[in-house]
Image (cartoon, rainbow, N blue to C red; front, side):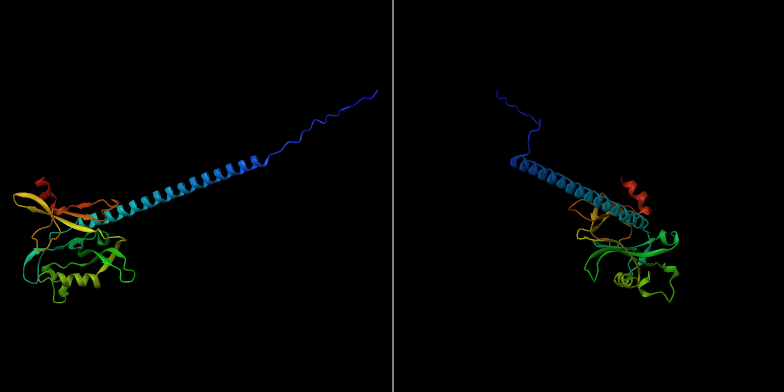
Length: 239
């Protein structure tokens, strides 16, 4: 009698087919792309938020400095080179010259001629917002040694501007795009509503309000309204 014996080892040989391996590699590649794209977007969003926060901090710092300085404009009277009596303020859309204390220098005990203006840096052609200042000398304190450009009894605005540019102490408030920077001045009209003007020249009193516009396109810099403190009561009486 012939007997056949079958031996079962219990092992079966299995493995991945080529198609399965290709599918797995494709899925891993897609997963890597999704993760890298998500990480890239997260980094870009973080950078955008950080940039906006830095910009807002800069906006707050510059506007605080402007509000503090321009809000303290003084109602000083001067005589120009033609003998015309006027308030010590000369302003247009890109420049403002006025008299005010600088409390950060001497606790407001001294008055200064101050010039706020947009200037172009000679080396880089970059625009910058600059404050230049020099001591103000009232008419009653004038002496023969007083610089003629500071003579408030015979003042030339052109000579004063040049003196502040060349010899005044200066501080750069902001560097960057100032193409939309503009100054406006609110003037009272007898029997009519106040209106905004692009200039404040040869006026007998301070403007009711001053408006500073930095940028109009992206809205990052909101318009800044500043009311001279010495004219606060007059402005409130008109509301």
